[in-house]
Image (cartoon, rainbow, N blue to C red; front, side, top):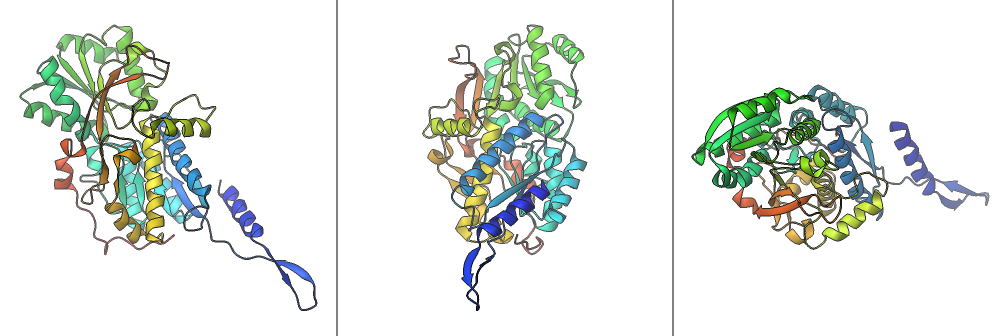
Length: 425
């Protein structure tokens, strides 16, 4: 990939050749150096638990970059990309970030689904001053205790989704709540946020079942659920683990027996599943079937860009990857430089009208935590789909200030600009 990038750069230089006349009257080509390309590093999973989401994330980033390159790039510089698989593993994420910065000379880093991986990448990025966009990981700690001056978080987090879902579920179904939790950072932090809300609303946590990453046999988990007889089951399980869990729940006919609450449901985790597998209530930040200005045009643009992809419509992960990348490039254009301090300050005051982002409320960047504040939606299975892709029924939505994560502001301590190395790619 590095060689391909170099060849592209040489072609750009040759294409900029100008005809000049030498003293002897001989006409020759002289090469006028074109601006060097701006290289962006994609730090998303291509293997591991979140490989499908990583691919969707990249498609969103690439569509945004394609829009800018079609009009000449950014600040006159064409945009090139380098991708390395972070493997849903924090150690790999660190190595990838170091290599991209040191060897590939990337200007910016974009991409994440696993919060553990995102945290690892952001530590490396902060040490070099490289702006990093965490597109799709949603642990509250990413904009809380693990925040960094260079990192911006674009997804809703577990606390946001829990506030939208838990209170309503307890009121509707009962106060005996069971937690089912992926045994890693995102699962634990999302579960902790849920626990606080359950107790604050006068309900009870009857137990918590931990699910190791990579679990494919959920028989023991489902047996324990049947023994405990909870009224509400709050699930913080993601990726391929969640696909396997949903399938086995449906096979046993348990989908409609309990009130299942997934704080967040990523589109790549459920796309193409049988309708029986899509039980319960879940949160999201965007859905292609919402009746809002711009949605139909966005879907058409996606289908034109990816006509052969098995995922025929975009979902929330693609949406986050697209908007993070687009917002970064727009910020660079506004400030007229790639200087990291200038770009960070511009992103800290970002505000995007609802009509532009295809949501019900304006979205804005919290300058204290670097998390995008946005509308949070609750959805469930569509019982009467118009097509195979018409999987969700949207139940409700909440304004950003109604589901804000106050805990993040209490625990986030962004580095000063003086302690953030200058970097101008």
